[in-house]
Every structure is written in structure tokens, then in C-alpha cells.
Image (tube, rainbow, N blue to C red):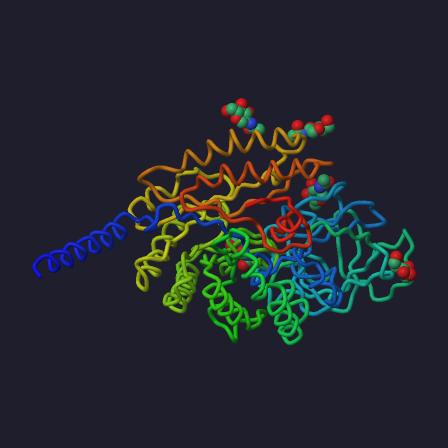
Length: 505
Ligand SMILES: *[C@@H]1O[C@H](CO)[C@@H](O)[C@H](O)[C@H]1NC(C)=O
Ligand SMILES: *[C@@H]1O[C@H](CO)[C@@H](O)[C@H](O)[C@H]1NC(C)=O
Ligand SMILES: *[C@@H]1O[C@H](CO)[C@@H](O)[C@H](O)[C@H]1NC(C)=O
Ligand SMILES: *[C@@H]1O[C@H](CO)[C@@H](O)[C@H](O)[C@H]1NC(C)=O
Ligand SMILES: *[C@@H]1O[C@H](CO)[C@@H](O)[C@H](O)[C@H]1NC(C)=O
């Protein structure tokens, strides 16, 4: 009798100690559990290169939001340029084109656009002179781009006052020509157009199709790109988690603000059902924050600009998204972690505003859950690898996310397969060691891929490269996640890499 009471008492004590340990120590209950995850990129947040066909049926698909156009006058032989990058007149006197000579489209409809210049002003008119002084999109002039024919690079630009632009002299661009004829090379209304930049993200696809058509296109995509069988495949191939990139507008589903469309929340609900069924953990990753945290298409920038974190309202709006997502899924045992924001870019995102957001975002998660891991992405761009430690050290179940690619840097341009592999075992390994400490935050290689700039690599080279990364990134204390599960480019599709024996888990 007394023996069994003591036994129960001891058992209780042990379990209380165990719970206390797991709460205070900030580590998973089983310290050997590390995520081996795959990113479900291209599913809830769109990127054209993952599934190019999504963009095929957009009317006038060359002219999506953010497309950067350059115009060379056929008469001056020089490029149109927003003098000083904006704030004054347009000229036509530049022999080469880069940022000041690039005009970013804001698409009104398939043939009407506003032009935004380097310093963010919109192109407009001062009487007949073409200028770039207004900051306001709504009272700027709109333009039509008239092509000679579908395949030609020759264009005219017609302003909403009904007149065509012309390079009157190298230093004077006006909108004052009403009648045009032919495409002769002595006609100052004719320009040779080059597409210098394209963006293919969520803003582009939804505004490109228009909200009504986009709703159908996205619904079809969400219901076919990732399905239940994929979770089954993921679970049966040695993976234990998925990282799911989502856009901020998911929190106002089913009626998100223009141009976004509803339905991504329903797909995330499905992910939680399937993950639960197949024993997979989910890391929700806020990949696109309001205003864009890096200017890239995958954060749904409209025109390449980066506005996130510049006001308290903007940060609060983002915290609300985190709060919404945590509250919605906290009862599902598959919810494992919330990543507060993906790849904020320095110096546009300052460490000060990021710390402010991370602290508030962490508190928003903790309000609903003491166990969900909170993932903080290191900044891209000029930044220190341990810059988040002062904040993270004081928080529980906090994870630092770093993304390691041997591709987005000219450093890798001429490296052989072996040099790439050595780089992983030596250089990446030290980078990861540096941030992996016994009492600091956990570490996560939240994105990597078995692809590189090596030409003519053999299958065996790929296998060794994949293995080197799994060996090294497997030492990250939180784990790793491959980018991505499906992709039009085979090496970026873990499904393809597994099915074809290029990666062995
Ligand atoms: C546009 O914005 C810039 C930077 O905020 C400011 O310096 C400029 O005065 C503004 N221009 C107008 C016309 O309001
Ligand atoms: C444009 O190019 C396409 C494909 O190369 C061709 O089929 C079409 O005839 C061309 N159209 C014109 C107007 O040159
Ligand atoms: C182009 O014209 C503007 C306006 O006259 C002038 O300030 C600028 O120096 C010129 N630039 C070049 C490269 O000629
Ligand atoms: C790679 O090789 C090319 C051709 O030899 C050279 O022009 C380039 O500078 C090299 N790049 C780097 C990063 O070393
Ligand atoms: C990798 O690390 C080694 C040893 O520290 C260093 O000499 C080398 O320059 C690094 N390689 C690259 C490509 O940065």
C-alpha cells in the first residue's frame, strides 16, 4: 500500500520535473528531434519560376507590375532617364542604361500603366514637359505602350493627355505629338524598348489576371500543386516537417485587400489536416510581409520597393498576422514553429525595427502558446551573424534561421564540384558553428538546395553535394529545410531529387 503511493508520488515528481525542464530549458523534449523539412515554396506564396505556366495566360504578360523598362530614342540613340533618379525632368541623353534609366510599371489594366522611377516618383507632365516629381500614384499620368507589332522592340508611349512622348532633344522630352505614322528611325516618338527586370510574385499574378480571374487561377493552383499525397510522400521519405511560406493577406481571408484573392487560408487548413494525419510538423513562415521586407518577388513587392518596418502601424499589422495564425492553429499538434518574417533585407530593414518587431511577434506567439518555437530569420545584406543574439538569448524556444545557397554569389562562379563540397565542409560548417552555441538560440538552416553554378556536374557530384549539406546542416540544433518540394527546375525540387536518386535521406 504505502509502497505504491510512494511509487505514484515519485512518478508524479519525475513528470513535474520533466515538464519544468522542458519549459525552462527551451529545448525540444527529445533533444534528438531535429527537423528534416522541406519548404512548400510556390504553393501559398507564388513565384513564377517555380511554376511558370501559372503566368502564361495573363493578358499582355510582359507588362506586369514591377517590370523595369528602358527606352532608347531612335533619333538621339540615347536612353530616357529620370534626371537625378527622379524629382525633376526626364532627359534622353544617356548612352547606357541602369537604375535611373529604368521605369517600373504599375499596371492599371493590360494596356494602361504608371511609370515609377528610381527615387519612387511617378512620371507625369508639367504642361507638355515630361517630369518625375509626384509621389502620389493616384494623380500621376497614365501611359499606353504602343508596340509596332507583337515581336518588335519598337514602341511609342502615349500619355493620358492623348499625346505621344518624343525625345525633342537630348535634354528635353515632351508629350506633344498627336499624329504619328510608320516606324522610321528619324521619328522622335519611336523608342527601342528593353525589358531589364521582371517580377513574378503574388502581386503580379493577381493584378495581372485581375481579381476575379485570379481567384479561379489561384484556387486551381492551391488545389493541385500540393495535395494530400505529397504529405504522404514527405512522411514516407524520411522527412518530419514542412516549412510553409504564407503571405500577410492570409489573415484577412476570404476577403483580402486588393489585389489579393481569398483561398490561401483554406489551403493552410488542409496542410494542417494532412500533416496531422501523417505525423508531420509544420513551420509557418511569414514569407511576404506588408510593404515587402526585401523588395523581391517572393515577398510580393509591387515594383521592387521595400517598405516593411518603416512605421509602427506596419509592424503592428504584421504582429496581428502572427497573432491570427498562432491562435488559429495552436490546438493542432502539428503546429511546431512560427517564423516571424522571412529574409528581411539590410539596410532597408534596420536592426532596430527588426528587434522591435521580433520582440512583439514573440510576445504575440507566447500569448497563445508556451511551446511553439519562434523562428527569427537573420537579415540578408550587410549584417552580423549574431546580431539577433542579444534579443534571442532572453527568450524561450527561440530559433535563428539562416539560408545557405552556393549560387547567389559570384564567389561560386568558377568553383568546381569538389570546391563547392569543400566549401560546405569547411566554410559553411564554420559559419554554422559560429552561431550554434550551447546556451544561445537554436539554429535552423531554413533554406538550402542541392544546386550550384557547376556546369556538367554528374549525378554522383550532385549526390556528394547533397550529402555534404545534409551532414553539415544536420548539425543545426533546430534542423534544416530544403528549398523546395516542387519546382519547374528539377534540382530545386526535392520530390524530383528523391525520386531520381540525387538525394538520399
Ligand atoms: C516626395 O517625397 C520626397 C521624399 O519623401 C520628398 O523629399 C519630396 O518633397 C516629395 N515631393 C512632393 C512633390 O511632395
Ligand atoms: C512573332 O513571332 C512568332 C513566333 O516566333 C511568329 O509566329 C509570328 O508570326 C511573329 N509575328 C510577327 C508579327 O512578326
Ligand atoms: C543630360 O542632360 C541633363 C539636363 O540638361 C544634364 O544635367 C546632364 O548632365 C546630361 N547628362 C549627360 C550624361 O549628358
Ligand atoms: C570566372 O572566370 C572568368 C573567365 O576566366 C573570369 O572572367 C571571372 O572573373 C571569374 N570569376 C571569378 C569570381 O573569379
Ligand atoms: C573558405 O575558408 C578557407 C579557410 O578559412 C579560406 O581560406 C577560403 O578563402 C574560404 N573560401 C571561400 C570561397 O571563401
